[in-house]
Image 1 (spheres, rainbow, N blue to C red):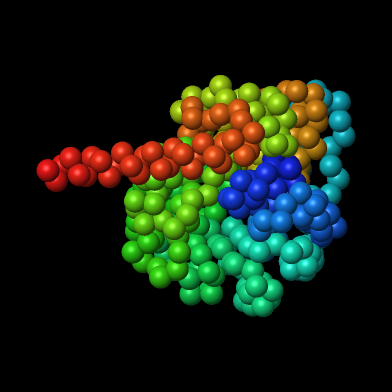
Image 2 (image 1 turned 60 degrees about the horizontal axis):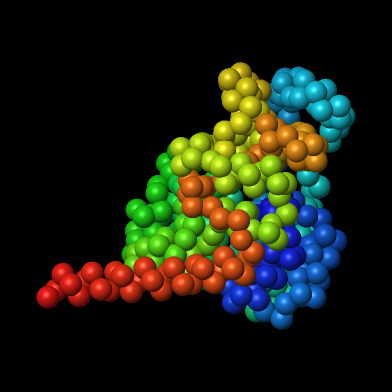
Length: 344
């Protein structure tokens, strides 16, 4: 959960509850990756993971002037300066990877494409489990062939950025219930189900479909340890099941979030004309989002969330993990009882 939701306290609490917490390091500098990992290790002896974005092609600056003009009124409304530089450092990924390899993390997960072959080899030589994100069967097969140890099957219900990389994102909008068993049938490596899973019923369903594990994001954003602004937590807790949609307005890449003023107004102008490609649009809107969070104004925040928002709970992370375990066992026991009743 890149962007501050995954505090060291949250990652460690999840680990201490015998699940696996991940540091979303895509926007962190190498120094921040090192310090965050060290902070996690101060709080737990349990394994943890780190997530990165796979390297992306350099974005075109075409349309930058129009995109700046489109968001300028919001910067003026909040009384903050617009960013001058939108391009990430040339060696950003390699420097991040080096920090991850030295961090002590046991897992490296990634999204937005393939990792370079040398990155996978280096991670494995450091005894790290490597996990890639797929939104279609074909992407899962590509990831398996690239050498990953596990594949995360990201259903269309997922909050945040879509991980599609070899198909248009529209083609990757396959629901979790349909996607997981098809990927399980197509690959020989473990499959981790992701998307819309908020409680033990969802976990039990994913296991029944053949998943070896599940990945939850939105469910942990409303925990006490999550580092997002309180207005963001309240937006999730009060959202209906139909309050989210896919947008490019905040980052330039399709992502699912709760609809708000910024999303509506920027999209109304036409995405092709006023939205830059990722990661330039993300850099253009980041100061706006940061100031909005400090001001307690949700209308300019990227309120990333999946479609299971009605099931969100305000709990400590440990309490949530324990509840998920109990609910999963209860759901599996119920399913077993129903099968036995059917077979009588």
